[in-house]
Length: 328
Image 1 (cartoon, rainbow, N blue to C red):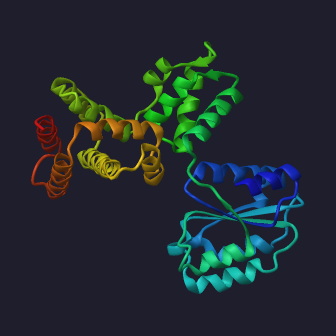
Image 2 (image 1 turned 90 degrees about the vertical axis):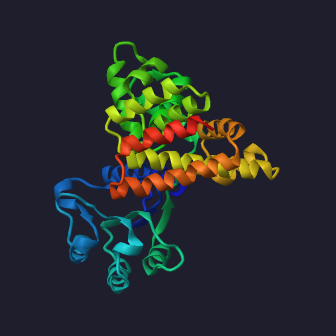
Image 3 (image 1 turned 60 degrees about the vertical axis):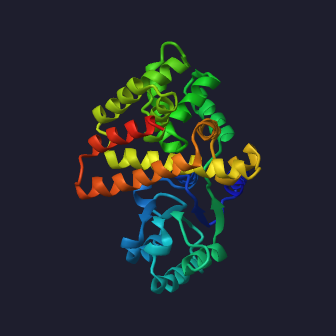
């Protein structure tokens, strides 16, 4: 990512880039920035290509720009390893080996096999590679503050942290939530924790932590109320069950590693935990035994099969699961 930042700062854009990585927001941001720097009359000089339109790639690259000195061709996909067949790699190689001076090309994908993929080898050989990895908590916090500031507003650190807990770390999702909050707080000029609680849409992971918190504290009435809220929001039982299973497996792994003598910071680094998630895992690991965790993980697996086969109503099954967890 530093490469493209430097190229833009110096005004020396390369002709071919390969953007890859999970953080699609950053990839799209730099695609749009390059487009703004290179293309006039966008309808004639900006082309989007994917594996389904591969036959148009050559014309997009070699046709002359209209009412502009430059043109930009973006070849975009999810996973080039599966979307671009080995037989098409030679065709792409021939095109990008000698492109016109007026054309810029960006290949962009989220995933790719780095060991066996022929297209990966070609693109890393021929392109300037920029990898956009998921950002950590400090980077996301700074970014939230900067986006809010660009809207002429402020956000407290506590509110930014709560937004991440509620919405997750995906930057596209967070950008939508920031825009909502900025519109809501336009008169006040500041986004607070109360704003986040009222406005931000909570993801399933965040709701699952609330449910488990109530279970840990044996607050049956509260746990069932949270579960009723999930049902009211029409969250899919399979998704709720999956989120519970994922969390319980994470807590079990955390507990096993901690019992082996590893420090919390080492465990967090090894598991790739966010600060908020690590705090929750630490609490749950202290309260739940390995035997209980494994039992509940198995029960989640059993209910998953029952839900998918229609052997039991999903919400009924989850109600039973929650009650079983309370009886540890």
